[in-house]
Length: 195
Image (cartoon, rainbow, N blue to C red; front, top):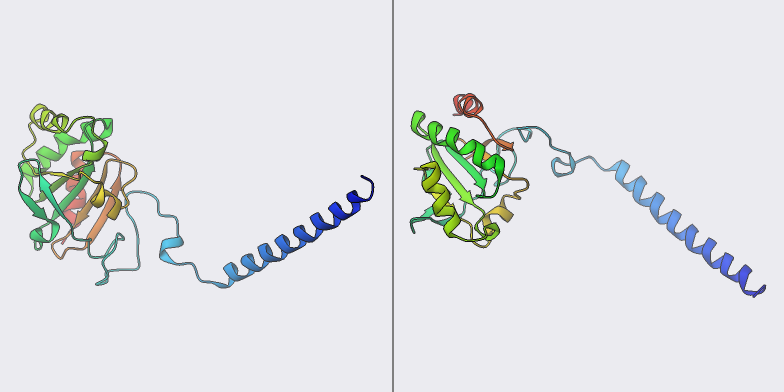
């Protein structure tokens, strides 16, 4: 036992030395690299970038990624079908309290302003698909409800938390991103800033 203790100690010290050397090397390399847009922490209502580009992405100024989903009524809808219009792309679920609170304001906004609202239901999180129809009837929703049955579009847009709303301008670019429920005044305020 006494002979194995020094050998064990040497092995531990050798392993620690390798770990420390690798760890310091990584830190040195990180400090030499410029931070990228993806590595910055983005907070608040607006995801900021350095300006408009033709790049498809999820940052302000990027072209919003296209997708195709089926509505609650069975129609096939693509985001690109709305090129030239202002679009409010909202991700929600019936069980989400903040989603419920913003729906009446979204309905009013839809009728008061010239905006296309695409409400993407996270259908794979619903207990029953019929809950969506019941919700639409209860809240008297008239804008299109898109069913994201496999979470493909939610994953594409990296949705977390809900509701999350992307406002997209007439050129298909992301104007801003809102995390959490929006009220009517906020919707109108952002709408009026859009091209």
